[in-house]
Length: 245
Image (tube, rainbow, N blue to C red; front, side):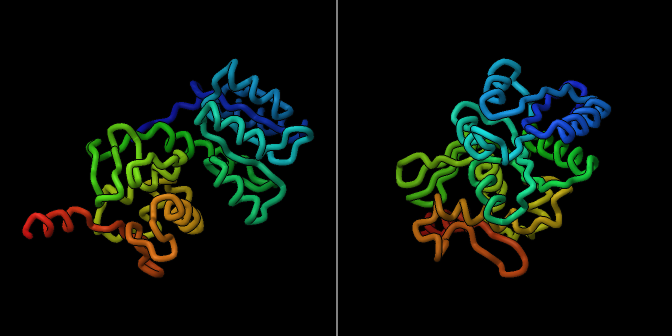
């Protein structure tokens, strides 16, 4: 298990609310983090280039360049972990943020302890090393997952996945044919702090199906066990059967 040492981690807070920024900054500094501040999207992008933070707390509602646009532009040049902060806790905003490449989404108001827990979990996740051997697997004639390079190819074309989508696919495909309960997926992919967030699993499975399934409405790779969890197709057993023919 990777241990995250906050004293060596830089957190960039991007928010135009001075009171919130001061409160979060003081709390994180007490926790041992180095804190950087930006009050808008353009300034945030400059800070990222100059200081290379380990994590960004990004507000959605900002004048000028808002959080979603900032995240879009950020993802063109960096995969730094991002936690979205917003007073708009609606599902549409949460889904939009996660789909745009955010690693987590925290609605205001939030407790300082909750935010610290989310930061630690996201950093652990970003730094965790895969626990299985890196190799390339051919799921079938259409889908190949190259764990060595972190690449997925569908019908010969590379599939663009976010870091979280790839992490989820990695965990599912590393356990072919095995039923993985929601709690197990959340603990391994997101962290034990997320055991009650089953909607994360459903959302990201949906994202993956849209990208790798020939027909997302009738999936053949990521199979749902209703009320229990998900099972990745058992490509090993299929390969054995094929070799017997």
